[in-house]
Length: 205
Length: 68
Image: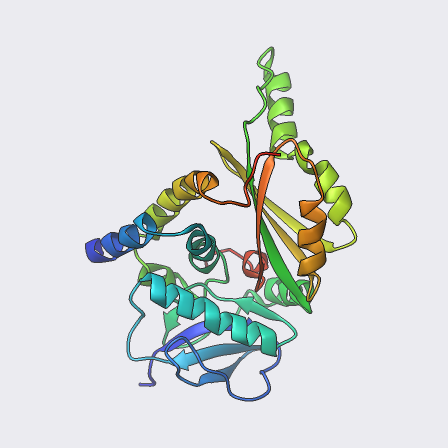
């Protein structure tokens, strides 16, 4: 039986040269249908600690810098065999989306506006409007030249939403500058650039 | 499974905001290779719930999250 594989990322071409994984092990590029799984051989699944999470992220970041398009794989994806069958179309589309791009993350804080409870329709409409975060429209306008894709995850409570933006590699300084110049009705906390974690397909198969 | 949950809680309790961002990305997003991999980090549902609460709380300690 072959050793377990700790999978870091999925790509459509192997990186040039040999890169190291979270444990310093060489990352192998393994053919899996039209994809390459970028993985290191390990003896067992990693322990869940702050250090192992940082090491996994650092390994993915090295791979993202070495490849034009990678889809990061979640921490703890230790498998005997890599198989993406049945997901090819979805994954190929995602790889095209992230090619030459990276991710910025915005946490949006503030009070949710009161919802209109006069009728069921009014309630749903006000909920839909609130979840679309119209307070961010000035930000969206300012960032429009930089943002290639947006994903919003609405939350309840003091954090209204997490907003994930896909931008061209190298444009993070301009992105951060544009945000710092804005006056918004909500508070935003940006971080990044990150590999395109939030634009990798989510579905559990 | 219990030990993994305890480990996750220990990380979250002491996490700084940048680590919370990292946890959100590395644990919560990304391609899932298989269902078994999900079980490899057992207790993650609980981690996500706690993480969301802490990301909210991070608002109070992030210097960049100033009132505008």
